[in-house]
Image 1 (cartoon, rainbow, N blue to C red):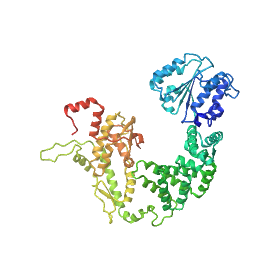
Image 2 (tube, one colour):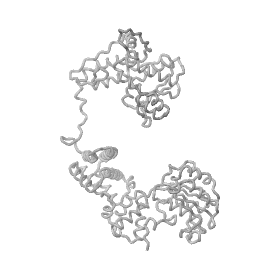
Image 3 (cartoon, rainbow, N blue to C red):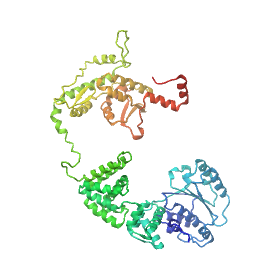
Image 4 (cartoon, one colour):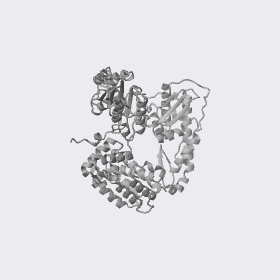
Length: 611
């Protein structure tokens, strides 16, 4: 007798034998009973959950001559017998993965012109419909929207997002669910009973977990394990055949971590790696185990664990021993390891460090524990910082006042040069400095330095850690700039805004303490959102904080030089999709050459290059 794999041999033939899709099959049966059939259906969902099977059962049932009161086919009429013997002329199946061209769809459309010879409907089942080419979809549209009254289309796909919206809008959509572990185990028990296979519940549970929601995968794995085990499925043999790590390793690892036994954890990891298991998969398995332990801490979340009753009991026992803080922190470590695993050049070391951190979560701080020290450095500098607070505050106030005057200073006119004079830059700092000096601003002189010299250098002045905190507070106080031209309401364009923004940044460079800040502001382009409102999108948190401290001055300067006192000024952090690399002039030139063939030809013809 020819051997038939279980996935084909035990393929459901009626709606009632379909596993795990109760709501969907009930809807289809009611549609058949009430004779309210759409002309097109779309069955979508993961692999191996019954899409094509339900399409075939549905096609057989709507052509059945004696439909039962509950909406099932009789399997006795000529139409049902023809279908069961695979000789029905009313049901056509097309695999769109290998027949995805326009000619295949046109051939299918030709068959829709001939009415059925036996039964009520011609049913066209198109599997993996997302593989059709755009041209084939377009050729299919008109017929799909208005087919003959005796034609029904059933489309099946695993990737609904790849189907054109115009196709989806013409279909009734049925979403199939993944198979959960209890339903899969129940079906495997039925198959094992009919095949005369003895089994352990743990073994079937392991097969169902390995199938990951697909019944066809579960039956294929079942056949493989039966061949390996010789008709007696035990947990140990299935574990060996599928090369799956025993869950006891995770229970043991968590127990060792709660006892802070780092050496034993390292020995256990070495045994697991020597048995051929990947460190990254082990960490992922540990994360799933910790998640189940977390779910077992509360009876309300216990049903969320897809495992056997014996394992659920063990999860509950371990959950009583694990503090919630330990589980949360361990899950965070596992997630960080998973994120960094692919990029790591020493993957085993990364896994070992992760397990060491997990094993030390509950460990008391002590010498040699290998834990990072508490952050207690702040108190060491209290006396040091106190001596320089007043000088730092005075200096920041003077810097803020000078920044305000520099940003609002008019554009300087370059002075004529003599042959003996020293050349000046295009920004003309001498003219700017002259403007500033007329305001009687006290000169910026470095404050007296603390005795130990613990300081951060920024723009030519020194300040301590706590002085930096005072600096932020002082900047907030100094930045009380008010708009003085509120009566002006001139229109300005994006070009005007960009020009005045660059001019302001150039004027700011005259102040030594603002050179770095102004250079970074040049790389940020303000945009007009809704006139006269301006938005500044910054992709750097440090620059964002610095810009926020000067927000009022920036707004006042733009209001003055754009002659509009009603300007709104919003500063925010850029979203991930808004962050773009800053290109140098050479990179911009190379990009233009790649994108514009005419520029490339001109550059080669005139031998152009960036100076």
